[in-house]
Image (tube, rainbow, N blue to C red; front, side, top):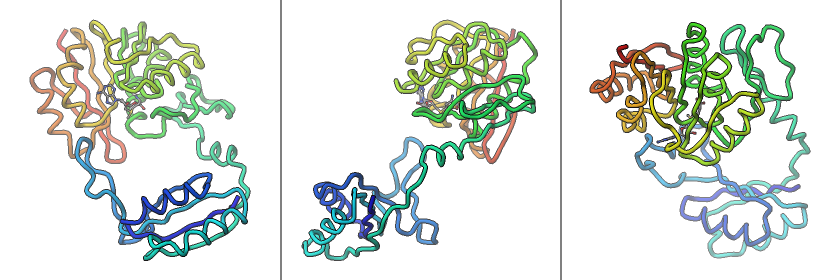
Length: 296
Ligand SMILES: C[S@@+](CC[C@H](N)C(=O)[O-])C[C@H]1O[C@@H](n2cnc3c(N)ncnc32)[C@H](O)[C@@H]1O
């Protein structure tokens, strides 16, 4: 394959991308041309807030073509166009052959949650010390065990005295990793829900691959009260969900929240104060785990 890359100011990115598409590019991608420099700009805002800006000052637009002739033809047709003014060709070069499957797989190694509890991609041997394991490959839904928020929830699950997890709800299940972890550590009746149907599908796939019983569905599928309620989402939705999540915790049960930054601890405590008293139970890389127990 051949790669044609161009430098474009913000106001030309859309037109150039559409033109490359119309010129039969196999794919067109856009990157910040100033990435990894002092001029790099973030294009995402806090959850629920609009992004500070819609596009980068300067973008690198990369189009892939099946061969050199197609890439050269696209370049030669673009150059004389009015809308090309202010843009620049950066390169026209072959894309080196890669074993993409091997490259992707090499980025996902087994992850230890505790010395004996591991998350292991299916293409890896189980580590010898893994007494409990979850088999999981990266997919469409969040949750491979590498993110600190997921790791802290799993660590909390693994630390609970045997037989105490009881009926468990994983709210915002993503890949289903927390529901599977809870089932492996003895939760008796596990529900996993998510607003994203792809996450529900992914959870169904992963639970059966791990030979555990979990009922996965959209949020309405959660019903009644639970001994353990786990929710690894983000601070803003967690605040909105406070009455709903607290209403699902049975007397003597535990609420476990993640997706919260250290500096957000007080606002979460305040949002949950009318229902339950949240405390910081763990921290990793600037993220915290907050838990609360309902009086028995
Ligand atoms: C950070 S991922 C966590 C995935 C997994 N539980 C883990 O711990 O790795 C958050 C998940 O919550 C889901 N989510 C976000 N807002 C939600 C809401 N209001 N109700 C239910 N699920 C929600 C997202 O679709 C996403 O799959």
